[in-house]
Image 1 (cartoon, rainbow, N blue to C red):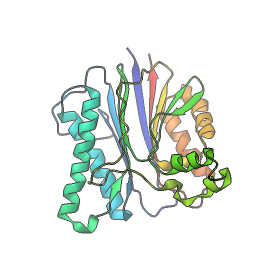
Image 2 (cartoon, rainbow, N blue to C red; image 1 turned 180 degrees about the vertical axis):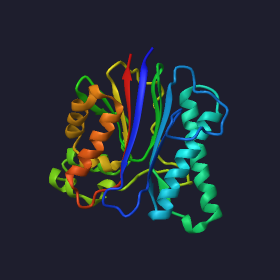
Image 3 (cartoon, helix red, strand yellow; image 1 turned 30 degrees about the vertical axis):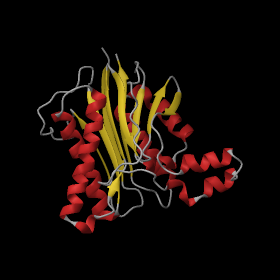
Length: 262
């Protein structure tokens, strides 16, 4: 049997408002969802993170609606984890459709989403947008989910010789989203067929794109220094490192950290 600990931290950054939201179920940091279901066999917890867009009111409402609806849907559903993750994404998207229909001024609001089921059965996820999910294992850090921004497209142009690396890094389109949860049809969804097996010592980090202030190697080094101290220490250190980077236009940053032990 594996043991899982989780911690969530957030920073508003240089923004005048917070558009990120996250939640974990079951967990002391959120109210129990209204559903009556139980986690699928082999699932210890479900985490969801959303990075809102659409201005102060719209972005914050979108991310909070997505997180609460996603968890409630997952808790009230039955069946295996992957199908519950996909149905919970659909429920969250439909919730935004209803919000916009009730208040057309909210048109254009939306959010990225990463939803993950974690347990002895492994790590399953559904992901839309550019919020990254990392796995730290044996001193190495890899991003698990697809990036639905234009960054991979632009980087591919560099590989084809159609753009220089310097032009690619400076291209303002890198952060444009190719897919998001907006209440309309979702164009790109990352939902692998099979869970990723987890092992003691693994650390899963789900984050909003504000964490991109740190290069992946820096994220890896921060985790490595705190890995033995647990989820709270890792989450604290990641947010502290973002703040200490002192980026003048720092975006909201939220992290959900899950550590795996025996």
